[in-house]
Length: 159
Image 1 (cartoon, rainbow, N blue to C red):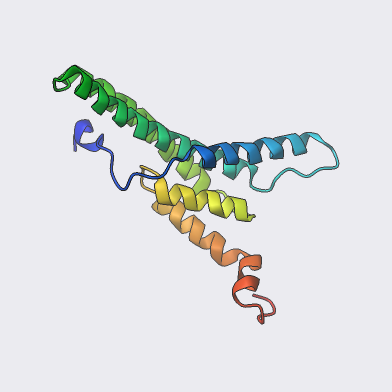
Image 2 (spheres, helix red, strand yellow):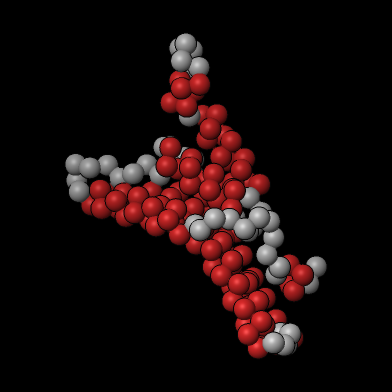
């Protein structure tokens, strides 16, 4: 498959991800600050939140990239030239690769909190790259989460 064919945006257009990205960064920053105080423990999902924030940021950049490309073509009232298409495709490939790497990193990190589970779910739902490994990791996190099992089956003793 050529880069041009792979460069087309796929899937549903996600909602504005900026609020989620900002919140993930805030949680990660709080975790980093807490890690500098001797008596405070860092957030257990700090690294995961940063990785998921990176995936979502790259997804947002991909959306904006293609909006800009189509707007550029519309304002000039002419089709994009092969050189322009190649430049847009190169930027697309860069963002997709960075999102893929962050997604793989997030998939290797277990989620210990609801924030980590939610961050993984956002990535699976809205990422522009393949997230099968991250989806499997999310499913494992959900099954391992004792607090979630207690909510679903309150009468069960050990989960």
